Length: 136
Image (tube, rainbow, N blue to C red; front, side):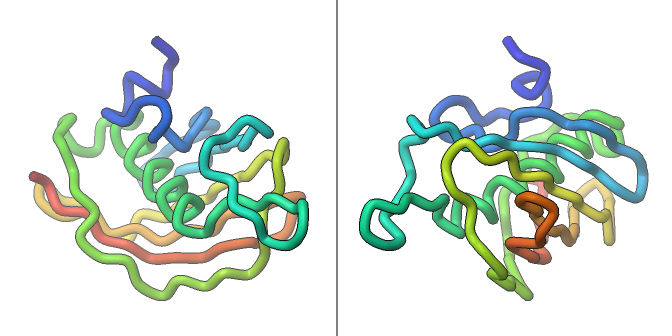
């Protein structure tokens, strides 16, 4: 079992975070590299594969949840994604490229987790979003 698997209930092929680099009360930083063999690549243009933006959103949400569990802000619980807002798709991610995710905690309680974050690829922002999760 890898470290990330101790922080999230998701498993292959639905686990979209490789590592939490740092986590504190304000900010969580994690990474994910989508290998060429990644199951969910779609064709963007002829013979050019990209990571679907819905997968990037799920990746950044998982990064936020893993960070919350890593620092013990909320007791380990099962959380459900309740809303996604302010999504901005700013670029795309190709195979074998690492994505760095930076997540900010907006509100953390026993019942609600609201976060906002940005995913970066090669130093350029490729996705921004804000979301809320509810404890199940």
